[in-house]
Image 1 (cartoon, rainbow, N blue to C red):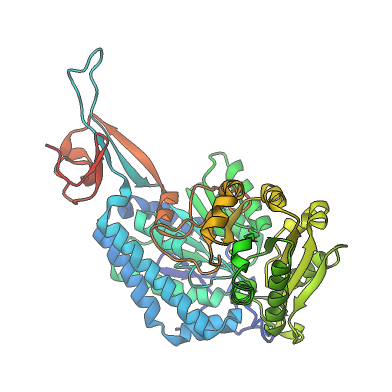
Image 2 (image 1 turned 135 degrees about the vertical axis):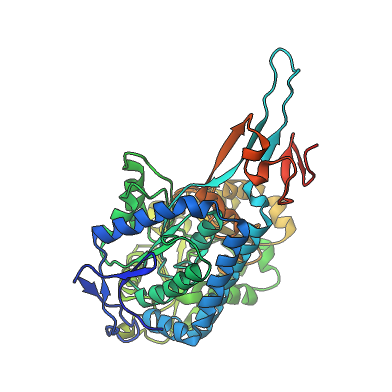
Length: 531
């Protein structure tokens, strides 16, 4: 694995600018050796133009070739071995066991989308047969399916350098759909991005795919990201990051002469509601699980639980006390980069200094600022303080959460109504609790994308049923997911064929159903050929 610090424009490397930047080791503050070049407008144009040129051929490749490409990507990434993980560890401070698991998630995800592409029913083929004798007007033959939109720009996420970055779900789902991808590398782990890009380029060459099906550009400035979103060849964008950054790019996408879909996953407070039945068997196990979720990945998960609601009682007080003890026992750990660390510390101070908020528990070991370490904090407040301080509803990215003592079930519903959109909401309780808190559940169904019962929001299963999205500001499009197989639908659009001859239709819409996929024929799901 040889890092160049250059961009991958199709199969070629490029470095037109002398403007460079370095990744930092967050645990030491030292610059890592490779200098990465800032992308120029010319390089961005070449990458997007190559992608647009490759699109027509790539969208017509067989599902089998796209599946083989995704499987080759997974193989090439695995072939990088521990050298990739060691590089990512140096750039992010994430521990090796976590990175080993994340690599497995990324490669398994690529193979999952290979299976999806190969099976083929995801195209949602629909056939309405003609009725030439229908009165007063004949019914035409109408058929439709999903087709790829064109070149997709993907922004690598800081907190998942392997699973939500160069070969994350955004990339592999777009490729599975038949869309070329141009990656905006994350400046926090540019070496990791380049190493994985090398693997993708090799897979594309080995599979004989058109040059431009994949490119990667580096950049630390906002100008690079803006230029990619503004480029007229870009047809869709996927982004995971901050609310401020996502909203700025979303506004650019919407203000283009021809607006494009911009799928952003941004801020989320992920509330937890502890109902009375959950506390009947004691608070210790519940508190242990909560703090484990809060501290997972140094709290740098988009599903990190930032607010905990319960009705003031001796048992809820015991849960807070037990959680505080677990927080005290949790050692500080290094955050992804100094910028996130500084923002976390400022956020904790902002919440802690609100009158009526107290520190219930915090890491007993002092955090080392030189290593960008974050201490764990559990804050505590009451319903009136929350009512008077909307800032308590805002996400602070890192291992801090605020427990709120509510007076009754009515206040639980009141605060659920005041929540902004989130990716998740968690309820701990019994089936009887769910029956007696139907009003709360009905509110949360309008506020989040995923409801968890007696579990925790961190740790997302990559599967067909997963929905990782939510109302704004959690995402810009609450009906789309960025994890799970449904995320492919961000990069396709329905195309309808009316009255077309069989030989000119896409395979998936022909009467004989040569791919043997599930289709809706006159309103009924079937794999049978059309008679």
